Image (cartoon, rainbow, N blue to C red; front, side, top):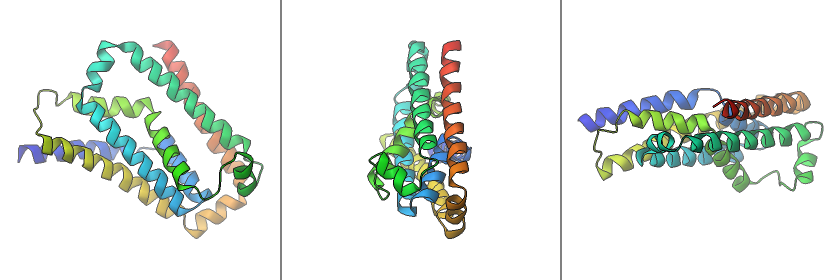
Length: 211
C-alpha cells in the first residue's frame, strides 16, 4: 500500500511537469501540424522514452551525480542549449519555403517517423530542466528502498504519462483545422517557433555561464 501511494505521488508530479509548456510541447505541436499525426505520435514516443531514461538515471542517483560533479550540470546546459539553438535555426531557415521544399532541401522526407522519434528523444534529453526535475523528485525518496518491481513500475508509469500527454497533443493538433491554419500562416508560425526555440537555447547557455 505504501509503495502504491509513493508511485501515485511520483506519477502525479511527473504529470504536472509533462503538461507544462516547453521545447517538447513546441516540437510535438509543430511536427503534428506540419507533417502528420503518425510523425507526431512517433515524436511523442521519443519523448516518452526520454522520460523513461531520465527516470532510470534518477533512480540510479542523478541528483547525487550533480552534487558530486557540478560541472556535469553545466555541460548538460550548454549542450542542451546548443541543440535547441540548432533546432530553432533549422525551423527558421525553412519558414519561407513550402513544407515539401524545406524537407527536400534538408534531406528530410516529409513522412519519416524515425526522424520524428529521434527528434522527440533528442529534445527531451537536451532539456536540463527535465533532468533536474526528475532528479529532484527522486531525491526526496533516497531513503526509500524500492523493490525491483516498484522500480519497473515507476519507469513504465512515467513513460506512459509523458507519451500519453504528447500523444493527446499530437492527435488534437494534427486534425484538419490546425493543419489548415498552419499552412495558411506557415512562415509566421515557423519563424515564431524557431525564434522561441533559439531563445530558450540561448537562455540555457547564458545560465550555464552564470553558474
